[in-house]
Image: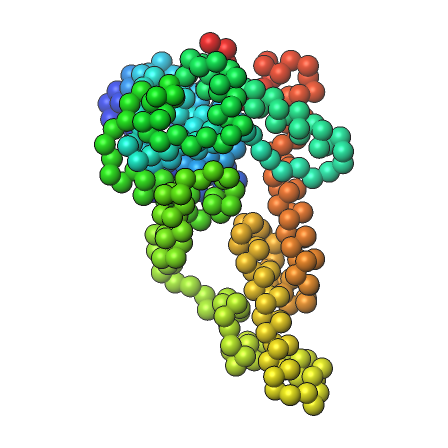
Length: 342
């Protein structure tokens, strides 16, 4: 299960947050939806919130945390596998926080993408610095540790095991759960997390890599349209000729009377170009038309640049200073995402 699961049992509410924090992800935990669900459950007296998430959008995480803290019910947060980054902020809403013995809680500095001129970069840097300060305050209030101690955790990208989180004051108890480490690996799988997190624990890294080699745990679709160019990285010369006879003819014409080895080398180069474009699009989660880039003969570097710019523009939409109320001069009044005092 990925995304949000909500089940009401009398005066008790079960809320499962499994996936990536933020609405832009396919398995996204949408803050607006969570807040609305909680507002429609004002009569419950107990909330059990289970988390397994690599994190995501910090401001969405802060919004969900505040909604849980504002609810009159007693909130118990259970970290089933992983509460990293923005998900660790959500976890701080618990009146009681439980960690599975093999689970992890990770804290780090806010990060983001920006595309634009120098003033855009500076505004985004100001937002990130302010977000760091708010995040550090959240952990400091929960742990009752000095701000400078907590700042050290955040700047070092610290991964706490269940018991370490308890010892640090970021959780109340570690509970037996033999599947918690596998659940943490599940939260990380498919998101390129090994490359995004500098201090990913070795044991968790090994589990994620093993899952990747096995193809993960997602079942294949029941029906799938046959695409002759889908496996472009491993396609043979014969298969390429069947899929793109026009391309092979062009290569052969250019090769003229050269040897068969030269023709195969040209086909290999085309295969690598197309495969590189497809692989980068998958890595970035890019919505660009991959087939169009391949068919138009766009070179690898130019294709990568187009995808990167498109991704940066997409992420930039959520990082505009004006969207966060920084132009009004009264941030706490107009910015519902910042945590409340106390």
